[in-house]
Length: 156
Image (tube, rainbow, N blue to C red):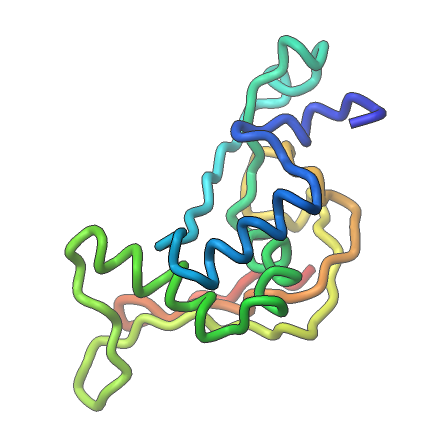
């Protein structure tokens, strides 16, 4: 925040390490049931202005996994999947995904060790309000299989 980069202006605001540790404990002990990602793309005029007047939010859909990778390491992949996939579906009354013969496949393929750089020219979102632009990230979604087709993520 020292540089007043409005790409870091989110609601709720980004928190301290102590807050992050408390959230991780709440995920582990069941206080927090689900993880959600608030993808809020903005046109450049909404972010390239005085910090106080800048819009809240970031275009985060393609950096979700990488931005949560440090938390995944601390809570474990099974709990992460439960909190970001299974529990939200249960809360909304949507049947959980089952990986069984004859079921419709809905899968996300990812490489937790892949490092990559988020480049604006290769980003899926047309919005550029992401604090990770130009940074090396660890953990990458490779693609999804949904409704009978595979959609590959861009190669960054």
